[in-house]
Image (cartoon, rainbow, N blue to C red; front, side, top):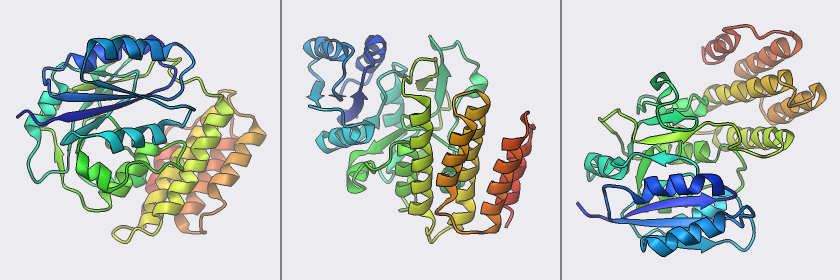
Length: 320
C-alpha cells in the first residue's frame, strides 16, 4: 500500500528538539508522506531549523503563522491542508520509531476510522524510562475512560482516516488544555470504528523531560481548570452514558492536580481555592459532585497525601 499519509506537527519554540524529532519523522520506512509543519510564530530559532529540513526533504510543507495562534488552531490549519488518506497528529518534541507509519498502515482495515497504537515514554533517549509506563491502548470503555480522565490513549497514538478528522472539524479552538481529550471524546461519542493495533510494542515515544513546558504555573493550572470546566459542560448531557457521573472523574483528577500544585509551592492556598471554586461553580449538586468537594476539602486541609484517597473518591463517585 502506498496511500499518502499526512503528518501534522505544530511548532512553537522547540528548536532544541526539532532535529531529533524530524529525523524520526523523515526516516520512516513508509515513504509516502506529506509532513505539514506549522511554525506558530516561534522566537527561539525554530524557524531556521524548519527551513533547513524543508530544503532537504521535498515532502515537507512549511506553514508560517503571522502570530501565535496556539496548538489547536495550528493543528486545525494542518488538518485543513492535509491531502493524505490518513493523518497522524504529532508534537514537535516527541519521537517515532522508524516503522511507525508502516506498522499502523498494515493494521488498518477498510471499515476502520482510526488505528490506535502503543506509546512509550522517555526523558533524554528511548529506553531510559521503564517499559512499565508504556501506554497500551484498549477500546474497552474508551469513551467512559476519557470522561473520567482515565485516559486510554494520547494524541500521537491514533492514525486517523483524514476524512474522519475533517468531518468532525478537528479541534475545539476554545480549549486551552485537554484539547486532545475533548477531540477524542467528541469523535468517540459519534460512534466511530476503532481498530486497536495488535502489535503492542510502542511505535511512538512521549518526552517527559523537565523543560518541555515553560508556561507560568499559575497560568497553566488556570487554563487546565477552565478547560476541565468547559469539558464538563460540553459533555454532561451525552445521551449514551451517565455522563455527569462519569465526568466527576475529570473533576477529581483536576482537583488532585490543584492540591499537588499547592503542596509543591506552585500555587498559593488562596489561588488553589479560587481555582477549585471555578472548577465546581457550574456543576449541579449530585452525589458524585459532593464526593468531589469532600475529597478536595479533606485532602486540601491535611499536610500529607493519603495513599488511596483519590482512588476511593473515584470508586464512590462512580458507584451509582
